[in-house]
Length: 235
Image (cartoon, rainbow, N blue to C red):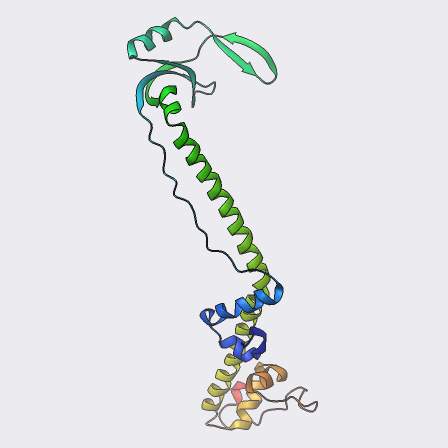
């Protein structure tokens, strides 16, 4: 099998992404990096627990733009409201102060549908299995990401070289297109077109684009261009 690096720079520039993909496997093999294993995840569906309507007491925070539950629930709204109206103090915990009580801030009654401890206990096996699958999927994703990174690191040289080859080929094509345009403008006068081309591009770049060899004698400043009548204003 032909390796990516067995192609010439010009050939590498003409490769497509689809043509490069099969060449990456050889590069990974040479570098001792295994291919990326397809990511397979276990199905995770939320465990449906029977819920009961509960009325919770929720207190506004000290900034007035958030809430925190007091952890107290009631079976009906009347009992919740009665309890709210009887609250005189709330226990406060702060990292830089000892535990203390304070008057409550604004307290609202909020209805919520929550499972009971009995429902959770009944579905314990399903909840445990769901957690196991979630953790297994997290581990699989981490492993997949690590494999992808190793593969990307091992093949980064190919992609960077391919980009450089394409950039070089695009520049070479511009030189060839420019020469063709200059030949058109000079009515096919090769000597004059090449002299104009040498004003726009270095000789080594022209030689590479046209597949020529630069001799020491050519690697100097271009000679003056013979000027035909009528185009003196170009110079």
